[in-house]
Image (tube, rainbow, N blue to C red; front, top):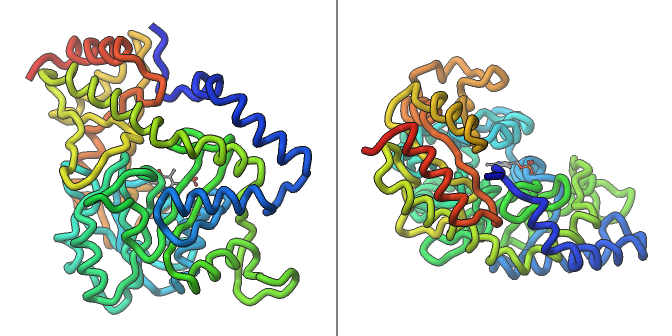
Length: 371
Ligand SMILES: *Cc1c(COP(=O)(O)O)cnc(C)c1O
């Protein structure tokens, strides 16, 4: 059986006519930077997320950087985040000269645990940066309440949960600003790097837009330090064609997750916990092995049966050589450290069939046994 971790080829075959039409329009007008398609997409994205302003940018990583810059984060400031995330979250904090301050994660949702926040808040804390990992949110009202009590801004890393809601409110609308990624394998993916930034605040929207375009509103007049991080018009064309299908894509992932849950019900692994207040868009379907050392065996066994899998993420950020900080030695964030040794992400995409999911699940049970 041919099973892929992510299957963008089959999805493209279905959507090709719609995408080709949008791309052809860009090519025929040769309006490659900014232009009407980017504005149309931004309007559609803002509507989709129920937010006032959407600003396209070059990647999710840039969205986080531009977001932190617009919030005025400077060298010496501190940003509180999760150690169990993709490197980009931490790169953004370090790029603006700030320091990541970590709180450990909730062992079920793998998102930062707000109960630990007050322990690390200081006068230097400028921003809380929650990451909605794998596609769902966790205790957002608690984070919002603590942030407003201490007068700290929230920037949401919504790269994996664009389209999910918490208490019926879209993730990406809880903070003063949020950033998402349209990396090809994300739930809404472009044909290359692309990202988006979202806010309800008019003045901040202006600033975000200017920072992403060389700190300039009027050409060759530069008011802030900025960068070149625009959303490419051809990527905007792809996204404009795909956005109306995003809810179907997320439903297809949810169906696959439901099949996995069913076929893995008796397996000696923990299937993804679903936070009752959140919807889950299953950017990843990530199981947890009951003991350290079991994951490598399982991954090897699956590979022998033609089943790919991946580890998101094998090393928590505080233990990455690039981000080492003497305040966070090994053992300082024990939940994230243990989870990093035990998680395994299974094939997850819009094109999975029930028989593929059943096959993968059977191979898992053969390897790890029943609970
Ligand atoms: C993908 C991702 C990013 C970065 O997005 P890019 O578009 O690849 O720059 C940031 N944070 C998280 C959690 C991600 O999954």
